[in-house]
Length: 401
Image (cartoon, rainbow, N blue to C red):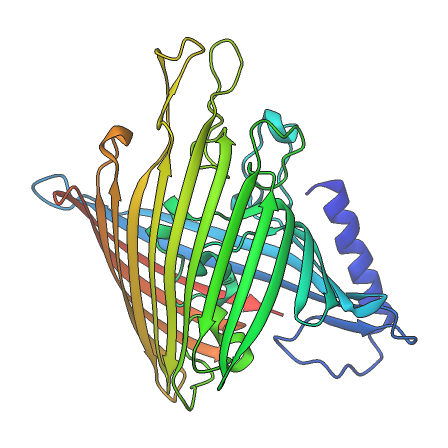
């Protein structure tokens, strides 16, 4: 473990030991540490979490399914800190990742170091319904990505999200909300960011990235920000709906998927640049245990095929362009068992030389303490170009203090 992360863990253990004889008013799922300064000048909540899973995949060779391929992994292991500093109007969030999947992605543009930092952002409510965010955090892109990995209805997010989401970047965001009357709410979110993803230290290589998102809630707020939580754990007594639209323009993008993928480096060590545009439309609906989430995503580029400095010879890098649809729904029984189904389809531009895919998923979950302590399983049937197919089974659990 990195020395800095080890030091943080030791500090937290020491802090907990010094307060071990005090009775805390917190409870499971609301943070391991909840501390407010005596003069109310700052607060801190520390909430570690991790997700463990196993999966089995059977691929069809044209005649029959072959032997299963198995894996057992710690998918996520994270340390999350949040609270306020100086004033409740100035909030912050710091989240560190420890699992291999969390920190992977070392390259020349982050000094070939593990990418420990997920979020490091301050949020200043400077006037009324206006908030200014600064730092590294998720962009206001597609809904499925905004939903925390700890609040998912299935073992993992859909194929749409894995191919077309915006993820995290470093920059500034402006958030605002408007009351349109009769419980009708509108939220506006705007962002200007570096455009190359998280933990980049050797930039900016391309241009900046501009993102805007609008959200409409015609029936008012969901309980406990349920529009960003999959499954209707609060069993909304009246119908709740959020419809969202997002637009992203990454000027002179230098990576195959804007925020991620390979840098499109030429043989003369210059970097190929092309404008990339992404659009999203999504919706979340909940009522009495039933939940539905739908998404559409599309990415386009000025020129998908990266070329050498002569503007003709292909480098081999191709921007992943195309569109996708993801639809999922579930019903939560009063016993806190849930059944859910998901359908995802991906369709790529011919120039990407990537085959279309479809995936059908059935899932079941047992929420012991909501999303904070749960066991989930799902089974998926996937096809590629309507021919090659596979079956995947997954089982996992989450624990969030």
